[in-house]
Amino acid sequence: MDFTLSPAAEDYRARIADFVEVELLPVEADRANYDAHGNITDAALQRLRAKAKAEGLWCLQVSKEWGGQGLDKKGMAVCYEEMNRSIFGPVVFNSAAPDDGNMMMLDMLGTEAQKQRWLTPIVKGDVRSAFAMTEPHPGGGSDPGMMLTKATKDGSDWVIEGRKWFITGAEGATHFTVMARTSDDAREGLTAFQFHKDTPGWEIIRRIPIMGPEEHGGHCEIVFDGLRIPEEDILVGVGRGLKVTQARLGPARLTHCMRWLGLSKRCVEIATDYAGRREGFGQRLIERESVQMMLGKLAMDIEIGRLLVMKAAYEIDAGRYGQKEVSMAKIHVANLLHQAADTAIQLNGARGYSTDTPLEWIYRYGRQARLVDGADEVHKMVLSRHLGKLGRDFWKWDEAHA
Image (cartoon, rainbow, N blue to C red):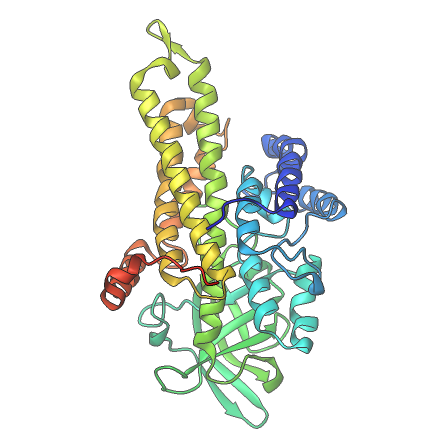
């Protein structure tokens, strides 16, 4: 791998870093800019989004043809890391979950007509989106083969019945992708459908309370009771739902990791600054060997996370799924984020536990990292399966060809 950044990627990274420093951190520091769910208020968000658009820092992940900046995954990695130095960063640049993954999915898999209808409004920032896959027990979660939501053909339409839950962003979304079973075939039994929030036959029955903070639109439980979707709103094709989930979830898991690295670095930044100023028992905290070991370990683990993310980005940019690389990054960075926030709070003492810094926000947010888009244990199972299949080739390098 070549870890050198392209001039274009470095230009975006540097400009995003400046934008976060000058525009976002002061907004984040003012509690008046937080909504009731711990996210940025719509008024502050729209003002900052307009500035990000004007500076050409909008939708890095979408192809230029469809209104984005067309960065590859390696370029996105360094830019997303810079964005999430602020807890408000990703949503300002239209690179926050779930819109981030949904846009990449539609850009990759949609027809021209589907992109025009379903992708373009999200890219413009006119609407938000949601991806409805996870179901309550005994339905599908990490194992999509357990999915119970069904779509039945009726004339030229498909009629959907079932229940989904923990659907991120659903309360604020206009465009939805819903996964439903269209047959009992193990490989080709699932299908991805697009629908608009105003289509009858479905409802949000509750916004599920969580430890928080929340993405805009929360995490919701949804019931489908006769939702009718025409054939043209099927993504890729009937029975191709597993292809859609692979294309949607792999890159989205990786962009989670990119953002979490930014939050982890912010935790270290806050901890190091405070340890350098705070004195006790005749010396500054930063002078204590125990504190140096805590911060040094975090710095190393962040760098390990960056390397894992870059390796996974390299695999995807090479046209491969990078499944085991993404799983390794997901496990490591999710646990890193939790440890970084916990360590920074410990070093800041009561200050870290208060809302005077974003550490408590990051701590609450970070605990979900080990669950969303596949729990740690699921990804370890995935790695074990790859090891069983590949043996020593699990660690194989690519070979250069003349």
